[in-house]
Length: 137
Image 1 (cartoon, helix red, strand yellow):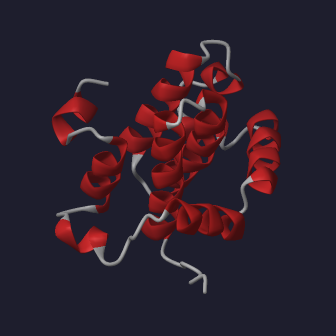
Image 2 (tube, rainbow, N blue to C red; image 1 turned 180 degrees about the vertical axis):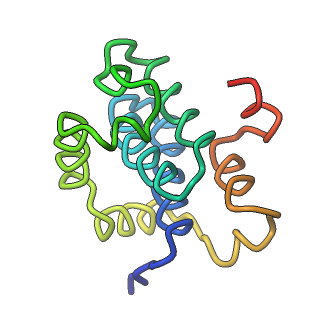
């Protein structure tokens, strides 16, 4: 049975888990799509450093990706071109499908967020980075 998550940090974690799994499986295009969603969630949740990191990972793999057109993800969210891309990717990976994919991968989430001081620290850990590494962006 799939449990629908309603907290923004839980939804962000869902997409970060899948992006990390996609990277480990050497599926960079899938990872980038998931990071577009994660970056937009992070930006909307007032985690600009997480959004910036997601954007940098996308551009590291694909320097000509549309997300590079804007200085920040927050700015991108105000532009119809980016919103069109975001909606398209969200149709490919709606939350319900993402939850099923995570379940199929056997990733147990439980109360993992509670082990961290902040949502940003938790999100950074899912990306495999530290707050200090976020400071260097």
